[in-house]
Structure formats: structure tokens, C-alpha cells
Amino acid sequence: MLQAERRIHKVFVTRNTEYHVRRDVCVAVRDRRSGEWLRGHLALRQRVHGGLKFTRAGGILPNLGQPGVGESIFFHAGGRDLVTSPVLSVERPEKRVVSTYPATR
Image (cartoon, rainbow, N blue to C red):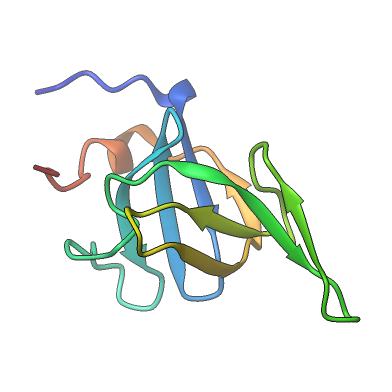
């Protein structure tokens, strides 16, 4: 079994989805309601390019660092960019969860 280093993993939790990221690349996406891994999600294998905060006045504040709580994750996906719903929390995955990540090829 592949030994996974947890400190390089983060989980960005949004309203409906968990984005599991290893060294800024999305390696797994899980539906929060069903707990199922979403093997065909657009974010898979894509780099996190930062966060976006939408203001009440309709503006967008970019963050080129790691997205934080209240910001949407911005993935640049080869011409099909993806912006998530706002991040509710940023967590470290449990070791047992990292070992269940589906293979991404």
C-alpha cells in the first residue's frame, strides 16, 4: 500500500462537496451527503490556483494563495475553469481517509 504523508493533504469542505488536495493538486472529490467519491469531477487532477471572495456589492476579490474559509476555490482546468461554492472549513484528512482515495489516472 502507498504510504501517504498527511501533512501535504488538505480538505476544503464546501456545502455539498469535499475537495481533497495534495500539494495544491486535487486528488479526490467526495459528495458530503452520500460519502461517495466522485470519479469524474472536473476538479480532479487540477491545481488550486487560489481563492475568490465575492462581495455583497458584486465585486470579486482574488486571493492567489491558499483559499480560506468564506472564499471559493478557483481551479484552472484547461479551458474549463471551476469555481466552487464558498469554503466552510479547511481540514486535515484522517489517515484512513487518505488511504481510501480512488486511483486517478
